[in-house]
Length: 533
Image (cartoon, rainbow, N blue to C red; front, top):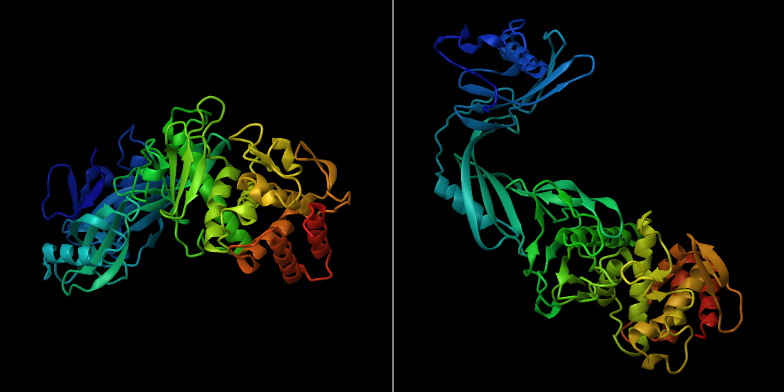
């Protein structure tokens, strides 16, 4: 159905009333609306008539056509009709306005964009379309491979002075294989640049997640109107690996998740809807970014603002997740298909991405005691992502990966309950698998946060013992994690062992709270309680 319009004409045609050089359809005149016409149509007709009567107010003149973009009618009947316009068939950027009118259709006021007059000096370009297209391709950023350039002649009036311009859209692929477009506006007379911007628009989608209920996710609306799992703020994108193995993936692999209505997933575990796992992965990557940003001022994994590529559905029944520095990628599997669902829950995602933070900072060697500290760092700060998110469905706890590997993969109050992990340091700890030697660091974190003994937190019962029979009073997990993060980023090195971690965290506690503070004393007491002296 064509948009309602108000056109200029030098002809008097059947059903048209001429007002000077301007003409409007007869039904546009106030109080001439036929029975059965909708309130919206009445408002449009009245607005057209008001523009006709007050042409100078609206800067309406020869060569212009108005197109209705939106109509808002208040509860008291006040009407607000929004128009865009063209000049001699060319879109006018910055020539839009809103007609405000009373319930009876009489003019109440108007709101204008920058331009009042929209007629440029000339509508004949000195720079042709080929020149505009070539210039845009030359200056496009963030596009790799072949790109397509499409120029469109417009009237540029966004700065208040109308002039002929080329609006050129360049579309291709971004550095992670995602569709990407840029728009370049250039003066059609001189070729000078006016402005440029991305085609994609920020949007907020609805996600039916596997682990955290119904949530909002940040997406990007693309040039074709569809939505993509591209986070415009944090710069990460989420892709379907199509069950390719992790060793075969790179940042340009996989298929970007797109959707027509910006509603994603079905909220089921072991879902056959492939976007369901993507909802959790996309949202939890954002939560991890926000935790580091808002807690420590860290701008992304490498503190350089760079966004990661996130893959779901990696491998076939791959019951794992991992971070890869090589491709700056987060990879998650589909679980074992029977008892373990997709590995995209909050603390798992936070854990794996924290490996990237460790790599960018202390770079703890992934073997021996330093390897245990590497894993403990991801357990500790990954768990803090869960505490930061404070999601009512996946409530915060000290049970690592308890959602994707029920009842839990590792726990902090007494790590040995998994049958493999160490509660306390000993000379043999460095010979354990790093996922088990991490127990010493995890146990320290729990004791420093919550203290020793039995207690119930968020409905879960814990009972944390100490090696030396001491009683430890916790300082809370926000302070304990702040100590650990500072120790990681300032004092730990690639070969730090547990004794070195004690020194590093004490230095961090001294920096943050002072050498005579209760926090410093608790950090020391918690290390002694796990036999790190």
